[in-house]
Length: 111
Length: 115
Image (cartoon, rainbow over all chains, first blue to last red; front, top):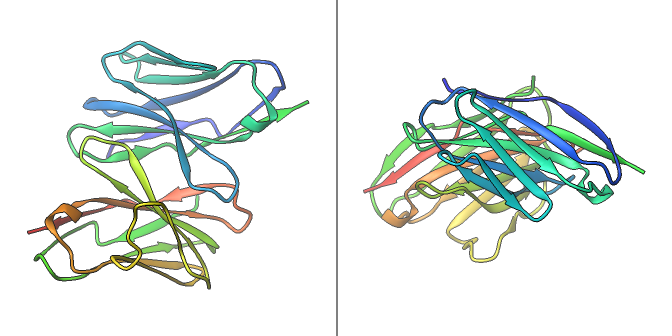
């Protein structure tokens, strides 16, 4: 089946930029999503990108998509302690119409 | 790694009947489970948060009498779609958090079709 992979951990200093990476295998991807999960809470949709786009910027968030390499990244500018959470990427597959999630990347922001 | 099993993966039911979907954490105890719904070609919508031993917390706009959630043990949460209608046809996904609420693990999803 289709697969989505992420690195497990990322630690950054407050004020620096964070880059969270994601790779996927689905060749019929339509949309790719980034979700944030804070402790004890459900997923919160941060942003998404259509599969025919290369980049999308939304305030402090920049999503880059390399469709050829099936690589997606989320850049958070001026990272704050409130950004500490787990970030999931997800692929919406055209073939199955299902969301396939990565394992999540834990972002820790230290002062 | 931790596994969450969701069953059934696909179900077709007649309008007016009820359908139960199970979400099990196989190798860990899940104090909190989440139920999501995905509309066609769209992202997830959080329906409710299920806490073991207490009532589920429903998101605004989700009918709790229609979508019954039971989290009777640390390894099992169930979602029952009561008196299903065609507009309830959707893809339902559960996720489970571990004991320290650190990571979420997702079930495989259930495709519900109401005819």
